[in-house]
Amino acid sequence: MKTFKIMLLCLPLLLGACKGKTTDSSVSNEKTVTDPQTDNSRRSLNAPKTMEELLTNFTGTFSGTLPCADCGGILTTLTLNEDGTYILETEYQGKGDNNKFTDRGKWTPSEDLAFVELGYDKKGEDSPVYYALIDKNTLEKLDIKAKPIDSNLNYKLKRK
Image (cartoon, rainbow, N blue to C red; front, side, top):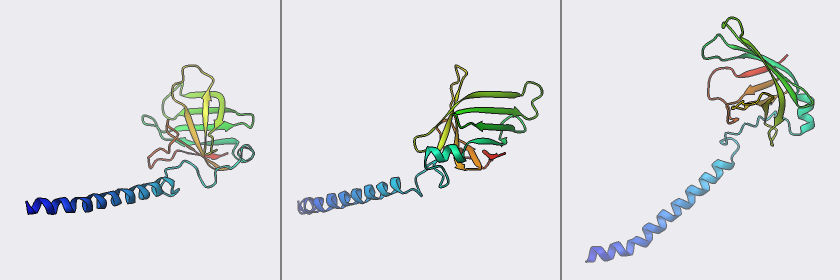
């Protein structure tokens, strides 16, 4: 009986200690979410801050060889025009004939101007294509959720 009374007296202390820990943890989590160093943001420090800057510094022709699972690489040339249209040319290296493709459409910037989405003119395209605006000389291909691709491979296109 004496042990039971001691447990009852200690219960509020234990509950108070747990409550305090939860509060500390939520404060810690809140900092993690808002801290730009730990936030997996797509926004580069050199990304445009205004639409005018995007059109002035981030339009033009960019090219590079992107990784390919079953070929030597995908020679890629992306032209972003100031009128909001684009031309995307891809050539699959080492795949023989009929390995070149040209897609056209309209590009749209994200709300925070961190990346652009390529909208295809072709109907039935199911996966959007995104490119991060790294700096005025570099674009980087993103995954289908507009997140950086977790890989050591090079997904960057450089200004021509």
